[in-house]
Length: 590
Image 1 (cartoon, helix red, strand yellow):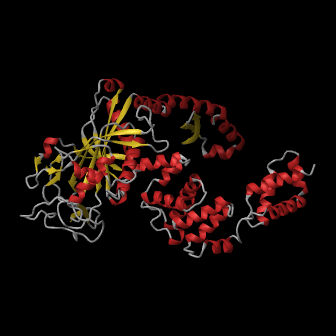
Image 2 (cartoon, helix red, strand yellow; image 1 turned 45 degrees about the vertical axis):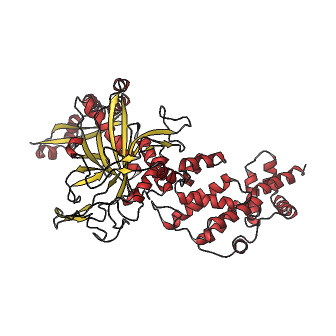
């Protein structure tokens, strides 16, 4: 005689969760001799020992209910987390480092262009060779003044430089020259006026999100370190590239006025546009010419009422708008979890891992005393005059927020206006097209540029963070597109025909527009009333069943009749005129 184990598995659903119960029933089997001697008796004994399906179901249900009693409800846990987050306010401040669009570095004559071979653009001062002294780049000063004026900040007529001491392998001097005590610009604000990027409690009088600016300061950049991987994947050393060392940076420090990850990204995007419009920086985050650090903390409603802020954590070097949103959300949730579990948030510097969506500790946060700020002895104070500031103010271009408002005032939708003003080149393209479009409406031109031109350019050149119209063929110039849209406004072309012509232009077809229209579209849009009426009459005569159904109330059949006319005219008819003409013909049938 021997025993065996019968394993029965059943899955029980409860709400959104499932529990698997394993039922092990010990069943006594008869001996081989007994089985051979009486098959019928063996079957009877086996039937009695194996539990019925109903019994199994009852046991499984009982065990499942006991298991569920000890399993935490994820929905309840999620609700608890949401409640905890709702009890805390997220507070964010940003620090943006933008590489200035100067030909040379901040304190040396070495070129500051991006890329190139390692250590090809390094002056003696950049490498901290003994006896070398800094010479301030006047062009960098002018760009900082321009940015301060655009931010509506107060340009300081007297500012100074300091040494910020810390030791990295890619910082040859052992200190960074910055403006800690007396920055070149104090105060100002960023206004986000794009569609859908406002929040309750943070709007200005015009409905835009307003974020205060604490300071704008000049400073020099560090070099770049590159780890050398060994054969086993471990770090086998570090290479130093000083091409970036000493490049001119402007640091923009905001007030802690931001309350969400989305608002943080919107603020950075608005500053990015402003830097590009001013030609202060190309502000390409992917190339490192714009780097963003965020300081995140949380506080309760009581702390807010008392004007108290929680302990903040800095997240370094976020290189995309999406990463900014994700990092702020994750860090705020981490702070709430720590506080709700009775812990204390430590001041520290962290980095964001885009793969895991989590932040990782880099080091404990240094205090101002740790940096041992001292006045820069080799640079005198920077003294400006009111005339210097006025000279820069007289050369200020149109800012993106002003351009946005101008487009909206002309009837362009907010979403389309946001696309047009994303880059200075796209706005200029639109403006030039408007100058040559005849009677075309601004909204129609803007829609064509935003949807067709930019869309075709991105598709042709592939996805790129750079200006989408940078590689646009000369054949699709803004002047020619303006003329094309002028013909649409005149009724000589339909919107569909204009798109067909655009395909040829994007393929670098530099022939005259009239020749392209004749070749691609078979000629201009049919504008002769008699010719269009004749074609519509023929379609009505050839489609008696559709006409009868249309007259009985099946209005959707009108699109079929219009489609037939468009087919016979090879798309050269105006759909609106076709529909009107068919309606007139049917109305006369009686």
